[in-house]
Length: 556
Image (cartoon, rainbow, N blue to C red):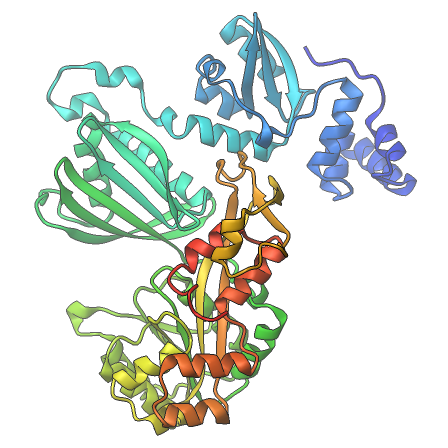
């Protein structure tokens, strides 16, 4: 039964200043025409958000409003309500006392969900209000993908796997894993067979996190399903294989690169998720501060030369290049790329992919690109002397070239080019700038709070313990799966070519000398950028230390 209304919702929102008289009249007029709840109409008109509505409903109906992200859940009560029910009605049980269940709902006026849970459990229901997003996050965290499995299916002693798990269930299971991974915006899925079960892990914000434990009995069917989707040989289990899956979901199209690897307990599968569509990030979103953004934007105005982005695998180099191309793309230029793989489908950009079986490598493709009348060229990675030679040639002939290399910092990029045999005068003539970057996790905004660093933490970052900086950290909540982090941002070090740097390169000066000179001229190091982002409450002192551990001994 729905709760008793004590005060009109419009009056409450008006009294609390969330809406004005004009908006209330507009909403009431719309309600008279279309019917429906006034609160929902106001939300549709963007006059209030879901949180405003929940607070008003809570006061109106005398029902508690809960920030579910911060609440500790009683796991025993979760077992009383099947996942199919909580997903169908968008509810979540959090606590049971005697014969009463506290049930979190997004719409307290809808009695059907409460009646369904009451009938199922035989318990009385006390509703609590929260947002749909928080309820969905709680369901995903505590129920996972268990609904795709029927526990009693796996109690059989039969040896025929086709009798243990029907094909339709396997299809649902795989789709569920892919869909959940996409929803959480993970970069990789790891399916790992163990002696007694199968572990499924997602890589979220650069870190692997356990997602689900599956029955070992389904391993052959699970592996076969993924192999079929990826056009692999299902009969081959002793050798590694590579494949590709195109997967359409409500979150957009996914391009998945699939790799199998035989292990002691069966084939391990890793799926790399490439989200080929969506919104590209701005320079500010990537992590550029005002100074670096201005310097980098200035580099992009040049009509020729080479701009390099350096960093280890997984440091966001390709994302930076995509965002850069999106900035400079316009109808009057021809942009051609060679990538491995194509991670993002860009309009008005001519993209090609490395295919070594067909003889298409970075160097061979670059030769062809030069005959395609390009204005701007993007080479996914410079890996050898031949590719760097062709990139230099392209820059010398009036093209703007973007690429990536693997170095610890920006200054080391010059050393790498010299080691590949590039003449110093060619480097100073063509290279406009080298940017190094690393990714650190952002603090979750839903559970962010002050953090007092220890003396040891301050010393590790070269800070004076007697003059500590203001720090923040995430406490952990449902929104961030109790990690305290949500999303990532780049720490950036941008070294631009000028007369002083040019003279050092021509004299074959070591990387550390170039680095120190650039710092004297105002270059912001990755460590300095990290400290700035700590002070701004974007990331934590632990993240910066762990990420820059290999370079933190260098001068700040």
